[in-house]
Length: 301
Image 1 (cartoon, rainbow, N blue to C red):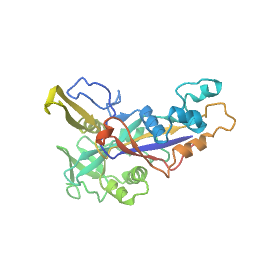
Image 2 (cartoon, rainbow, N blue to C red):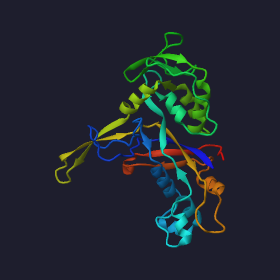
Image 3 (cartoon, rainbow, N blue to C red):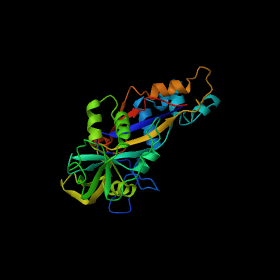
Image 4 (cartoon, rainbow, N blue to C red):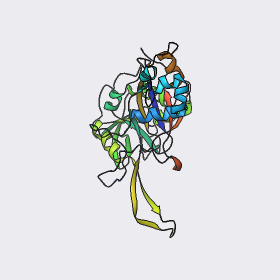
């Protein structure tokens, strides 16, 4: 049994990769092959377990929590199977990255490869063509182009692109808006007005340069001045970033005869009618890492 899950960044999001080797001291974690940002499935599973109060003590008292999220260690044969946890979370890959736009304030951009890699039930077919390096595909009636017709342009950061309407994107715009902003018609409209598809290479460029980088300092308690050497740079995924991954449950571990089924675990902890407000990554006390987690409407066998 499988469902897609969606993460929408309400505040800047930092899931770190440790110490960086470039000018960014604390970079976000990135995929090895694409260099696109992502959120590890282990991080998502951990914060969802915490949301449902799945402490080690509560898991030993509630087999449903143990079956879903596992135990740190099994003390007997019955617990040994539950140690793994039955819900499996894939990494959350970036689907739409918010980029500053001269018109419309900002745009949600994606690429043909990002859409092709997306695993979600009933997603539309891949777009028929890929934009050229100097082109961007948009929806009719959008808010990010300078004008209509052959001379239409969009301006993302310091890059200008020729805008082309693509009817095939209408299904993609409606699908992504419905998944990322389920039940909110106002935000669905805002998304579709600012949805755009760029070339894979340009999307990679924006994934590498379009993140938020903040300078941080540490103050000495006594002097109230910057501590010597205490200046560093942190990288964040910007507000409005949309990521997606997959949750599945093939088998419920543990030896209890009345153990819940895979369907029951998915319904309880991955309910499409109940979005979760979570905090993922570092800097929680400064308001960072707030995300809304949504689950796809339909699961597939």
